[in-house]
Length: 96
Image (tube, rainbow, N blue to C red; front, side, top):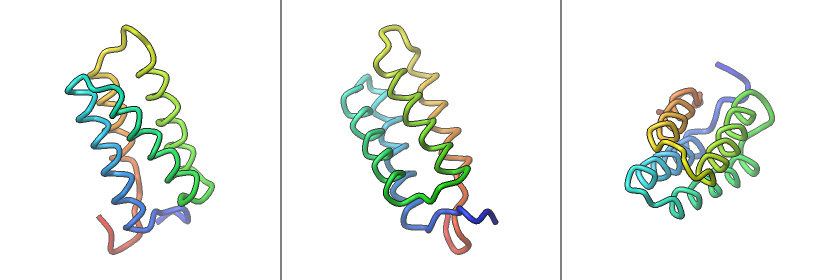
């Protein structure tokens, strides 16, 4: 298990926020999606130790924010980015 594995509670919050953002994108609510991504970025900054997972999350939040601000971005692309990031997160033993 990587040294930067997420505590289960941090993982749960991040997974919930990424899922919320994905659902909001699917319904065309970019404001809610942006808010969820901003919250995920804040959780990452405050709760995720430096390392590969933090870089992954930082990159995801920055990329999704840019995609949400673009006028012609495909919602499926944003949702896939969020899903793939969530699936790559590693949680400490005893977590999801």
